Length: 505
Ligand code: ADP
Image (cartoon, rainbow, N blue to C red; front, side, top):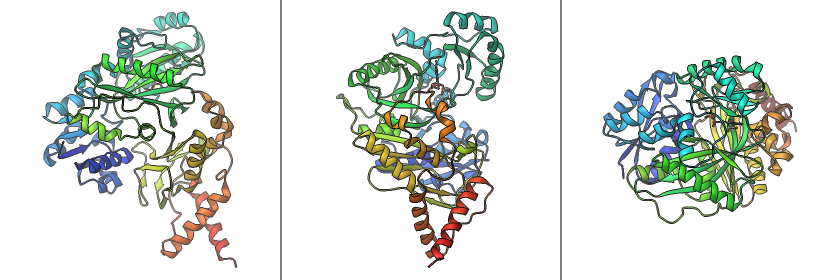
């Protein structure tokens, strides 16, 4: 096992990896930018190294500085987390070239599935069904029109190097095609430095179901069941669960075998995810392979009863996975809500400010993977993910009830958050029935983002009253001043109201 691991990331995932290291008895080295000088991930790690200015390209994206920090602190391995450099083949190669271990797949496996078009071509050779479309980038608008005509509208233009829903355009008819191609290329170039765009048939009403795989360096590869990630806005996941209401044990086995076949074809090692679209007939189509830990990995951990981050580190250190399946059937049900500093009532506009008060939920079956604390300044340099709230219970209904309870306990003062939006989803009859697909949220958004305060104001107010009493006792009333307007006003109003209420006889 390693003595020390450097974590080339920030926020909740860096803290998650620190925790895994500590449980394994492995030392941890955090890195931080100017903006993150007092961030929880830097405080919690055994050591922390300053790597540059706040913009990512001057810090978390600087491979040279990260490798130098590992050398200087004597770390033997680098865990990239997700995002930033985690899926960049040159980074994986440079880490190994510097005599360090990359906690992830071999650089060649990243190359094999790193671009969506390369992955589609590989899938075809491995007998893995893909969404109908091209495997080569489009040459020009004329070729795009020919392919789109053959596939039939609507079609989806996608950046080969894509990620995070960037460089994607739905095209509903021939007249929109040329302009959509131009703007997809522009966005792809700006986001990935690569303007290659290809086309897929746009599938109406499928679910996004992905399979977690885990393989060691000795040829053992397991599938760890599915995650349902259909609750998306602008092609980005917001709520995930495991298992999926749409997946039977038989389908789970079939999708698992397909994912393992794909991963083996790529020469894959460590934790990875094969994403699929699943239609109402139970047919599924490969979308892409993510060659890293997923944001939503905790739901799998809870129903599989294992620690994926610890396995990533153990596999990178050469340990063998058991030959027997790590998980046969999922145990219970897990749901994750991504809590972001975004104002759902205002088109999910990012909210900035200082978190003046944070209360993390607790109790049975509740997990908070957070990256912020009271005093954290939320700016615009990084992703707006503040933390992930995960609830586990025996059944899906009980997991929803538990998530609802936990969301009500979660109190963040100082920035607007997506908490209330998540509460409304938990209360939605379609969601409760599991009647969701990847376009469901966009259809439903108008009714999920309007209304004031929490859907269950009374409980929230009761909790806020307890918090107020607590902070008054401690002589530190949460300051309401910050640069966020609406959310803060609402919290300030709520607290002021409570204070008056408390003072009344
Ligand atoms: P990215 O890497 O940018 O996240 P993905 O290929 O993973 O892109 O797709 C993101 C989401 O976009 C999917 O989860 C799905 O909801 C939607 N999507 C992707 N391909 C299609 C398609 N062919 N038809 C309909 N929706 C799609």
